[in-house]
Length: 168
Image (cartoon, rainbow, N blue to C red; front, side):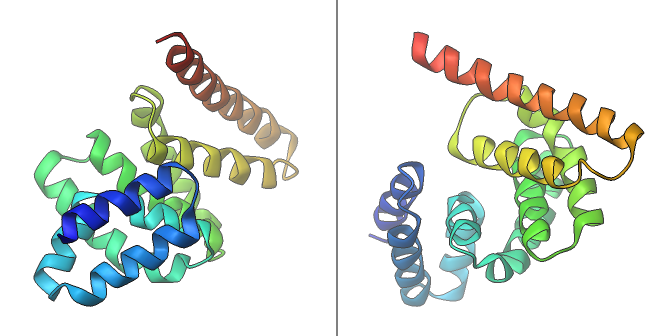
């Protein structure tokens, strides 16, 4: 029953209905015992996308760090599932004002995400990174160039995935 509800909430996130999704996730995690709740949070990180999107980043960081530790241990540091967790942590850190750590998280996660199939989490992280880069673009001339190059690479990755999706 809880997994079906989580799937429903995940679908709402994919459709952009973040507030409704957060309400379902909250109900699921309130009903589940801590072991089940932890398992559900670690299997899918869509709940983190919803929380970040509605301005509840601080509620996501501790759980995402646990997900990152587990995924690093299970899959390794360069695996796509690990990159998703690290990229979401980067998005949270931007919202919490921790730009230096966010930059590090994005730099280590984005290369794996650029080569990954299109998906809600991937798109969310890449768009968060683009917004982050554009907010930092006025620092120095050298950084502007590096920022622009990174932004174009990400935009190209997002565009090509949308084109491929439209063609299939």
